[in-house]
Length: 173
Image (tube, rainbow, N blue to C red):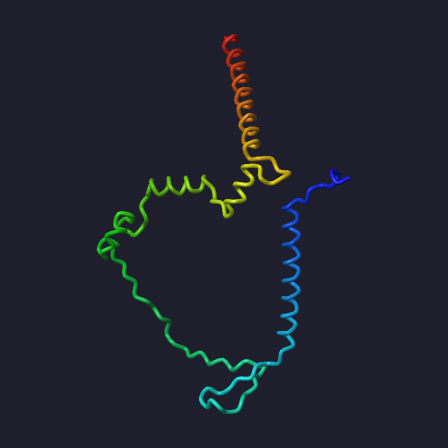
C-alpha cells in the first residue's frame, strides 16, 4: 500500500508555501490600511515655540501664491566643440559637431551581449535542472541532445531536397 503513494513534489510544496505567505501579507496590508484610514488627522506642534499649543491640520490646502508676471529665464549654452573644451578622453568618440562617431568595437560588444542573453539569477536552480536533480523534470542534457538530433535531421533532409532539385535542374538541361 505504501508504494502506491506519490512522492511529494518539492516545487509545488514550495509554491503552496509561498502563496500562503502572500495571502498572510495581503491580509496584514489590508489590516494596516484600515488602521491608517481610521487614524485621526495628525496634529502639528509649532517649531517656533517648542512647547506651544498643537494645531490641527485643516482639510483645505493653503492658498497658492500669486504668480508674478516676469520674463522667461534663458540659460547660456556653450556651443564650442568638445575638443576645444578639453575633453581628451571623449575627443575620439565625438566629431567636431558633438555627434557620436560610429564605433564598430562598441557595436560588436552590444550585439554580442544582446545575443548572449541575460545571466541567470539563480545558478543553483540551473545546476539542478541541468543535472536532473528535480524529480519529474527531464535533465537539460537530454533536452539538448533531442534538439541537436532534430537539427541534424533537418539539415540532412534539407540537403537531400536541395540535392534532388539540383539533380533535376542538371538533367533537364
